[in-house]
Structure formats: structure tokens, C-alpha cells
Image 1 (tube, helix red, strand yellow):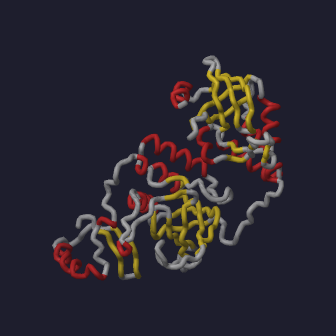
Image 2 (tube, helix red, strand yellow):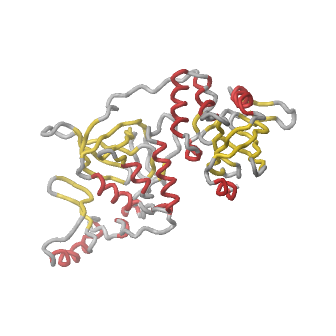
Image 3 (cartoon, helix red, strand yellow):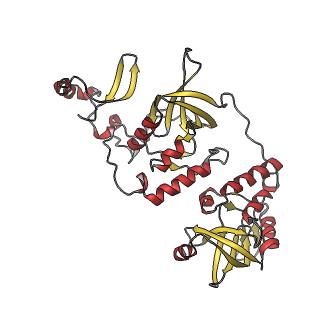
Length: 370
């Protein structure tokens, strides 16, 4: 299958639809090579119909038969244009089906009719990802079929867009921003970047070395954002339940996190992180808990994988991480800190990065030279 995808080179080819197994699953004959293949619609998932092997009876999810009939009535035994974008884990081709003479995408029409939903795992395999999401938005607004009981999320207080300045980078996907008018007491808020997952940093006190490229991502974000004015667009909130102390870590109270898209000028920081290979797209969670820029994130991740950047390179980071450094702030390292003092005093000034501000006159620094 991969060789066939490479041979097609992303071009549309003529095909004949010979069988429709579900609204989004077809068996087609590719021309002029006469290859019989299974083609799944990219970025589209329809309700399934399962057949009982003993009785032969069909067990259909709501609107499964309607979505299959929708597809059959439009393309079965007809000539179409097919775009093959990739292969799934089972070796099936994944792509898009278009009307032979018009720019009509079968997947878009299925979703617009409310007979399918957007499938994140394969949306990057079609050039029509943006149209699929727009079609889903229209189907939700119309309460069409699968969305007949849909209730849109209500805007919660504090979820409006605002301007702020980045004062701290806690992790590769966590920022502390200060909002408020100039001269006024700043309102510091912790913001998590929407729909991405960055490697977790370690904790020397717990003996946790952290995940690869955690510090690379944090350093990239620090250089890109600290001290700069940003536009914060809150997108959703998530409540983490309280956790008792145990093998999984220390106790943690219930906490509500705000996830947002953060822009420096017109540059989305989450897209930049993923393009560098320092984070991945989080495709889990409820469909409403997703960035409005999800497709851009997926495209950036695809590009990073192709370039073998960062996490996708298979190589170890070249940066010295805090877990590899000697933490002289730990009580157990007081004697070692005294031993290092003469080395630090030899130079009148040393280059350092401020990792944390304890208060106005006390800082935690990283001194790369030492």
C-alpha cells in the first residue's frame, strides 16, 4: 500500500466504486492500473454496521444505515476522482473521493448532512481538512441527524480574549502571563497551550529525570515569549480531580486549568513548538476541548515528522537539562554550593538564565558555564 501511495504522488486518479461497506468505507477500482483497494474517507468517521456471524443480523449504530445509503446513492458503481493521502494501521488506503467533474467532496457532504463526524487521526491525509471542520460546524448549528441533541458549550466568565505579557515559562506548554492595564497591579494567570502535549520536565527531589526534549521545548518557548506582549485566546477549561499522595506522586488538590491559543504578533506559539519537534498534538479528549487551530497543529506535526525534527529525530537532545545539572539549591547540596562559590566569584559576571523568581530579591539561576 505504501508503494502505491508513493506511486500516485498525491495526484487525483480516476476510480470506479464497486462496493460501499459503510458511509466512509469503499472498495474501489483504481484506473488505469486496475488495482482493487479498500479506501477509507480521510478525516471522516461514520456510524458502523456490524453483522452477527451466527444469525446474519445487522447491529447498526444510530444513523449508520442512513450514512451508508447516502454514500451508495451518490457513488456506487460510478466513476469518481480519488485522492489517496496515506495508509492506516491495517493497510487500508485513506483518502478523499470527489465528483468526476465537480469539486464536490463526498466526505464534506456526509459531514454537512450530519451523517458523519471529523476524524482527527486521518484529517491530515486530505487537502480538505478545513472544509470538513466547517461542514461539521454547519451540521452542529443545524442539529442535523447525529447532532440532533447537540448543545453548544456556553462561554464561561473569564474566557474572553485579552492582551498580556509573559512573565514566566513553567514548562514547554505552560506560561504565566500578567494581564491588566499599565501601572495597575498585574493579574498573573497560568495558561496551558491548547491541544498539545510537551515532554514533562524532571524533578531532582523525586529522582525523576524527566522526558527527552523537555528542556529544549522550555528553552524555545522562553526565548520566543518571555517578556513579550502576547494575545491570549482562551479556548476551553478542564478540571483535574484531587489526588491523594501515593505511588503516582504527591497529593494534589482539585484544580481548574485554562487552555488557550497564545500569539506573539501573528505567530501561534503552539504551532511553533510543534514545528520544532518539541511537542506533539493531543488528539484525545472530548471534541469540544480542542484548539480552533487544530489543523495547523496537525500540519506542523506532519512537517516535523518528515524533517525528523526534535522528538521525531530518534536522537538525544544536545542541550544540558536541569536534571543533568547540579542543583545547589537543595538542602543536601549545601556543602557543594560552598565549594562552588570561589569558582563563581572568579569572574565579576557570569551568564545565567533566571529559572524562578522566589521574591523581588531572590532568584533561582541556571549557570550553563558551571
